[in-house]
Length: 183
Image (cartoon, rainbow, N blue to C red; front, side, top):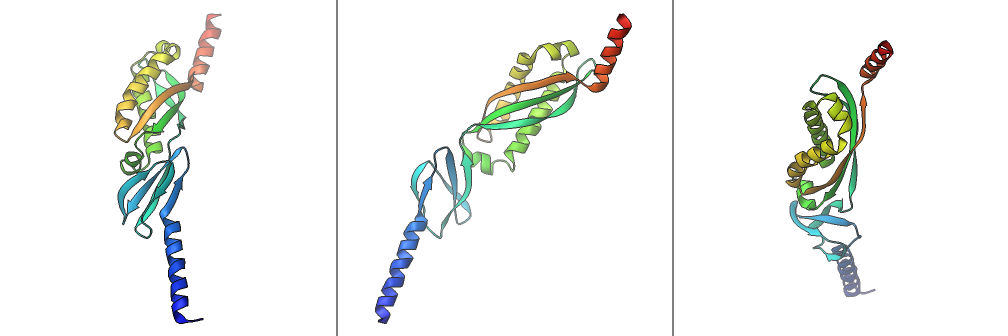
């Protein structure tokens, strides 16, 4: 086989591979973050997209679907020093994926901590009876407190739900002892 044919064949293979590497198909429900030479360049939307091979790289693949974050149980102290065990769940959506990726190191961990600290703060201003009976009020205040902070990260808080509010085990034992003493 002549040298010219081998070089031509190698060139065609190189061109074919380059074109193949330049075509990106982003699935529905995702956005891909592209970096050009290590710097943010673009966000690819679902469908057929083209990038410059060997220069552009897909650095992050981010979902645009709603994300459910389970907020772990924690002990919360009310204004009248009663201890409650509470947990919640937050539903978020990444509206600006590049802000969520580059604006904060770990947005899920940050939101979990933000919900927990806000929950402690809100319930800390309430009496035990108010905290046990007003989930909707807590939910509304919690959503208002968190929404502004996470919008800077390109994230929207769809809703936050209080899953469970219970007195701590020591508090339950004290309440049962008091009820038994009143009988």
